[in-house]
Structure formats: C-alpha cells, structure tokens
Image (cartoon, rainbow, N blue to C red; front, side):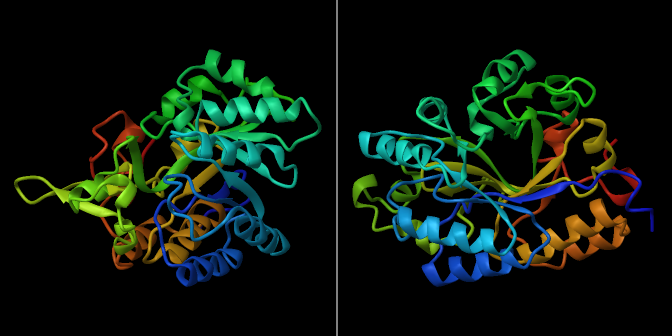
Length: 324
C-alpha cells in the first residue's frame, strides 16, 4: 500500500438522487450516506418537479439530519426550469441562508446572485449543466459567489486543468474555487421539455402516472444489436454505462481536482463510496477494488472514455492501464 499522506485526500460528494425512489427507500439510502466516508451531500430534486413526495420542508429536515451527522449539505436546483412554479422553487432555495445551493442552470445562478444582494448567503456551487467550458467563463461566474464548480461531464481531465489549473486557480469571494469532477454514475447527458418515460408508456407528460417510480435506475434503451446505449429518466437522458474514475487518481491530481462526485444508484452504492475512499484516499490497491466493483450488481458497465478524450462508452481503464 502507498502512503495515504503522500497526496491530499479527495473530498467525496454524493450527488443528487436523480431517480424517484419510494420515500422509505430514499430515507434508508440517506441513513447509509450519513455513515459513509462521503463528506458532502447534494440533496433535493434536480430532474422533475412532479416528483413531489418530498416537499421543501422535508428536504430541509433531511439536510439538518445529515448536517448533524457531520456532512456538508448542498441543496440542488433543477437543471431545466420550465415554468413559474419551478422558478418560485428556485427562488425559495436561493433565499434560504441555512445551506449552500447548487446552481442547476442560469435561472438558479440569477436567483442566487440576487439573494446575495439582500443579505449574507453561503457560497454556491456551479453545477455541471451550467456549461462552463473555459477559464473565462469560470472567472466571470466565480466572483458572483461560487466556491466550487462541477465541470460538464464530457470535459476531459486535461481540459479541466486548463480551466482551473492547480497553480493558478480562479478566485471567488471565499477564495480559490474548488474543482469537483463527476467520478461515478450514469452520465446525465441531456434534458428535454418532453418526458420520454411518459412517452414510452404512451402517456402525456402531465398525466404520466409517475411511471418513473417503476425504474429504480431509469429505463434502459438498447441498440438494434441489443447493446445497452441510453437510459430514460423522465425528462433526462443518461448513459446506460456508469462513468467511473476509480483508476484515474494520478490524472485527477494532475488536473488539480479536489473533489469527486459519486452519483447514486440502487445497488452497491455504499460500497462504491467506500472503495473510492479506500483506493484514492487511503492507498488501497486498485486491482482488487476494480474486481470488487464487478461483483456489486451495478446497473451498467463501467466506462471512463470522456475523461481521456475518447468515446464516452469506452471501457474503464484497467489497473494495468490506469488513466494518466
């Protein structure tokens, strides 16, 4: 084992739950997160406002529980805001001053900036769907109140280093802006005003019968050759495979990445968090961890192509071919 003190540890963030799970399952999931090595949790609905089993007060109560367990909590906003009711929800999140907020889109950015003009607010997170692809873009947004940014999921690690290089970081009001990379989970690729899950079941979006509750990890689509390709998750389209940067420790550190985002799935996720912490923060061997990932019943194959400027569906680098 290597010396775990040789390099700074990565912060581990549990990203927002992108699926609609039953309330009891959701609460059990976050109870497990409270006992996990993750230090930060992004909490709330980021996909569809019709998923309303948890109200605003419920999310705040859960956030307080996680905070009491020692976690930093960030409240999520939707990545596609389509109506006045959703705008009001975004403003309500921006106006509270108890927890930091992640900007899912430009609507949330505007609301967060406006809220900061009325009184002190925690620094916010620039989410992956704000589409910051250049240093100039990050330098424009960071002074508005950002403490952290999550690059778009398709941005290669060498490009991430050019946007926010470790030796010349963009500064925000709270200091240098941290970089958090999407490191595990089905890639959120696109959003649409149309609900594809409802359409698949020949239902109207506003009369969807909440059919996405039937798919704990989304509804998989295969190619005509029978190969897993995409996943429908309400208005969101995801990759069928799971992006995984467990083998990319060297490249992540070279890019100046400080935090890793792990996106929830219905099987094996608690162990995924433990393996990321063990390998990347505590010096555990990579090869056995990669082998164990294959036994966890994860809902898709593991890939890491985007991080290497390759096709996103390219298979995960092996322990012998670690991403550098």
